[in-house]
Length: 599
Image (tube, rainbow, N blue to C red; front, side):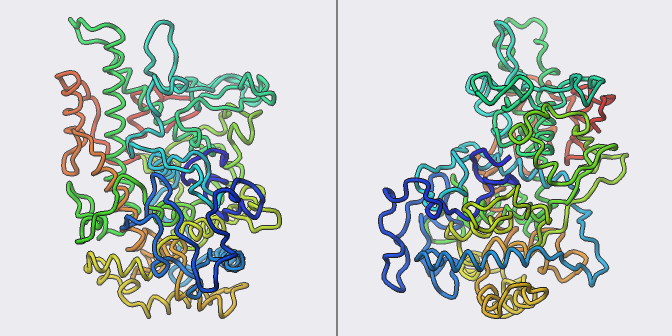
């Protein structure tokens, strides 16, 4: 976990963070930097940097936002000089430590957990993040992000994170058969080992893992590499198990589609390819249907969700006389701020199955990268999905944590989230704050003004956004509680111009007038950014058979009829949420009576 390139996730190094390659003496910044920041005249900001390919700023076509619109520290560009950066690092370190303090909900009477969002959605959101963004290496290791970094995810929310480029482009992710086309996604594990004297039934309950034969550090008993389309999906045990679930979904659909229609004259290869395309299309429609009807409904403010969950949502990027912003790239305000809210949802421990509960740190280390000698995953790590999602007829699953500026203490573990440079700060909260600062994001105040200029009604209904004075007062009150090392000057600075990533979490915790709803969903600003990107990606890359108003079965029927001239997907029921999907996968993958349990 954390050694892979790409975007952002729960993973360690790739979460973004204090991008201190220059301080560490690494990289080629001396050659690429056009002007030393510490050579700038007083009061000047650093020259605009080239944009990062595949990324953009929210509601903007500019590669670099003007200083007056960006997050600042007491009116100063926090990246202007080395002294400015040191001041920024020190302030963000103190704020990150303040975020260690657990929130008090409903006057001390409310639970820390969010029963509205079961724990599995934290990691489904991570999978969605991987399906939106793929970078060549972690953004957290460079300040000069224009040097060779780009977002390569061209087809968003189409399960490329599971399928890659398909069997011809990513053959390692697909089972090989002698003289036959590849179509089944690989699975692995389930055999007998020192911890598991009884084989799993059926096998194939983990992603496929291998000992790399050309790696001098790889031995047969050390499975150092994974054979999946997106290596980041082995970032921890829960995510690799979720990846396995989607492999089972595809393979189960494929098994129902593979027998050729009676009387066909197609070759075996052509029939295999048609079945693959139909299975992949069906899995993608199911996945997008669940994102739209289940995931977004749970995490977004209800007013914002209803506004965007339509066939033709009125996107803010098209709500201005200005030239619409580039829709095919991902906003940095999404990747480095709004969509990192999932980090606040992480629990201290997880019950993986009825017999086994693990601390978060153990979950994060259960990967081929960190523990190759303990791979494939043993039965104690095999997920019983009713622990993670609301499955009908099963006990309530464990919950995610309420959304607030507070992270699990284990996300401050120095061994999991070490400092980028010697003697630097560590921990996930600090990395999130610093990666947002170095990305040059909108300031909260400027972004609110920009949204107001395009859709005033979105702002006017929310006192935190509508009233600047009220917003500052509420931020100040939160920062003063259990202030820790924050000084009066720190509190004034942060209340007047909060980092966007911090504000998204604060807004979720404080935005609702109903204390029982606080921390249950994103607030208005966070919901707008997430909805614009997620619903915008589905609109931009719409699948021909998909509409917001149609049922899943209608969409699947149209898909199958395009490929087969008949509906061969009529065995798929309406699957409106993950609780519906889990038993369906159990049925089509023959996992109802699996040992260890699947449901």
